[in-house]
Image 1 (cartoon, rainbow, N blue to C red):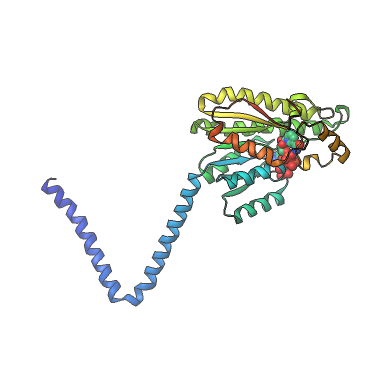
Image 2: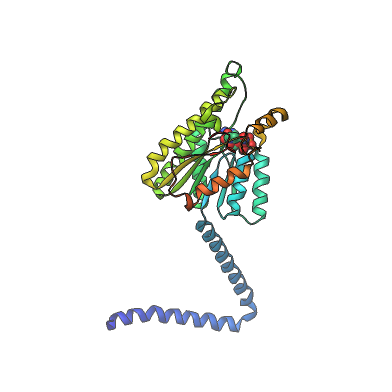
Length: 303
Ligand code: NAP
């Protein structure tokens, strides 16, 4: 190092040393006065350190958005992902209270969870859902399109408003969320999209024509999007549940349920855990080579 450079460096170092000595001298001389100031400064820096540590922990975790997670399959999936170290975004539309109770119970267990309202049938709202998640967690690793509705009625008795709503939530809702998250995942060059369809989308259900058609649409969407996004290292798969014990089936009579169970080779109705576990597997690195697939979780009812 040249002499002029050494001189240039010495000046600021000397000044800092000089300043430090004055502060040290004054703090000794006026210890009583300085003590509370230093204590405050120490507390402040501890606070900054802790909030930075908290931010670092959040950014280290993977983030999952689960649509329709206020109850049923979505709620169980939210709990499982939180327990497995994800930042979890619980999306809801109408059931604010259920979403709030679930979120606060997970938060009280120390998990990183937040709830965001969005009607998946509305593209502007799905855009906000994605943007808000990105703002909070910095990335979106997994999107689970689970939100869905069903109305059981023969076609000639199904109101047009109801059939439109079924298509808009079940099919357009999946399309909207995929479209909103698309640029983010392509930019990341990573992502897993898991769509919840239904076995009725594969084989059709009497008195659930709109529902079956919407779920069949989800299967087509899944296969096409998987091909489109594979070059960006994004996996797109669907889970096709059989009959699962949730409020969606609360209108089905016990007699109908029992006769249905008799036709299920594994002899029981599915649980929300059956679907949540499959979601966790598809979201994991263990499923990196699976894309464009429709995974039946139906006890063997459709093979
Ligand atoms: P569920 O208990 O009735 O829950 C449905 C969830 O979807 C709720 O959290 C609801 O949230 C949400 N949702 C409905 N419309 C929405 C909208 N426009 N925007 C955002 N969220 C919305 O039903 P589930 O049985 O858990 O069903 C979950 C998924 O599995 C559905 O796609 C369903 O079709 C599929 N599935 C279920 C079965 C079964 O037997 N249960 C079988 C095959 C497939 P809010 O209440 O907050 O609006």
